[in-house]
Length: 566
Image (cartoon, rainbow, N blue to C red):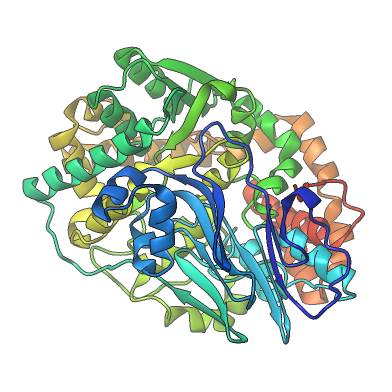
């Protein structure tokens, strides 16, 4: 729990635990308990410095900047903010002057811990919880409302674009950003930006450099597990398996992996094969029938309905089935898509396409003109998708993991990520460079089937594409003939909706909350939410449900879900 306030005297009752109070009525912080953590609070002179989270590459940076410990590194980073852009971890930082009330707060470059803020005239509230900001404002007699644009983002993108929330009065602080208050002025700026220039080609030389950076990133993170056991996610995709193989190659043996899938699907069988080959301990969490969706409302706990509630619900449920007291960091393969070229629209950089990053396009045209300003913020389409779908949507899993432990992906290590981003997009497009890199640097990993294509990653590229088109194409024809929904997925939502009558009845009961949430929406938004809820796609229904639950949790005190400010 974190909260920082700048407001007129007598702010009223602040709903923060007394144990978290660092400066009465001004600054509160209570770091969550984790098996491994770098969190600290330290005061030097008039300034209090807060770090919450964990840093994977702290030792290397301490050596690089010739400082004795992590605290000294962060004090130095307050003078040279560029240091923060080199850190790989899950964290946020705040520095507060107890005399002047001036402050700076920083998100990390991966946006894997969220910060939000309210600013109107002489009142500023910064927190890691939107609900806390809304409750403080309510205590001052200020009622918050739904953001029309934020609501439509949820109904279309399934997540918020940078800076937005579902609440009109509350902004999200974007990735790698600093919110500073000095001399009575509030300013938001980026201390680090990714560079999308083309600097490298997909050659063996580049693959060697990528492998060196990737191996260092994996080793840094695994080394931080200290006396705890290692736990990595493992699926039938490419990213998580490369983390596992790189760790094994670096000398980490016999660790645990977590796989979640429908039983018998490729995501499960491929993970089983890899775990057997490397002699890893496999924890399997069955997603059969979509039963984890029964408790979908509980996912408000980690992102307050700012990302679709079903996005990481399987992960959140699976983690609760594990003996997490034995494990350190949760090692993931998040955001390996840059290397795959998944955020490219063509074999090269292209102008921003606001539609391409959306989960649902039903409503986009109705408010696309309101998003025109977004185009000018990004140099190309890949940058737009990366900053928004990747860092605001796909890091959903990191937010879910943060409720139990710290989550770190080697793909998000700044040096590796930047190098991959600078590879010629013509080479990265359609996973060409990724597959070539894997075959060159991790040939054993490439011998296993890739769930997306049904082909081995080691197959010639033309054969991978042929198998993919044949497999997916024949399934599409079969579904057109039979009218059956798609099952070739770890999360076949529409199949579950059609085949699991009990789940369908339960969710239909849950969907009645849309009527209650409609009281907070204007008529146009009510119609938009109803249109999406009436969709044949369960995922689209759940986008409407997420908006409703977010609105009720944040604005309606009667909603039953309760997320503690502790």
